[in-house]
Image (cartoon, rainbow, N blue to C red):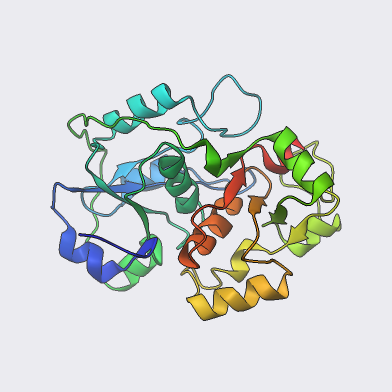
Length: 269
């Protein structure tokens, strides 16, 4: 089924459960200081047929930065092990409502799989509506996923430096105003507080205030208030590239599916 929005509803997914063309993925990830185990929680309960995408494991394990993009061939192997096919319609969700699912959504899009969507409201909405869940750890048949990387959706340190120096692109930071201002500590030990000179701030929860993505008019308003020109190039950033992906998801809803994410984000900066 052709979809024109980056989000799908719980009604839509419920009607598609059991369809082999749909690959349902739980991409729950918790901040380092949360004290929660996403994989263990997945094993306790998840949407029927879902598989677990570990943002930390499916990453560049040679980097000392958190969950950096993996090499295309490594991502393809991981996706095939999750049962994802080249023709799969991927639907990602998380246990927050909307947070880390956006990072997996962005991963798949960077790897060339545009047919990827996020479940609006995620697992909390699914459960609140009394929909079915299952436990255990599935072992899907391997898929035939093939990575076709789209480097336009990623920015590295040098590209971000150049954008800030020249103004060629807006850099929008998804961290909280307190972290952006340096008034609150970073959750990762040893990281300096503050922000990149010239960056704009739009906290990710402003685009998803209740665990669902705001509608287009509300998104337009919050980006306008943050001083973001939606007609100009945009790079999103955050602490480690997770909530930056939420802003990228919001921009996709506004027709800016070309917004790039600074993969290393503040952890690298």
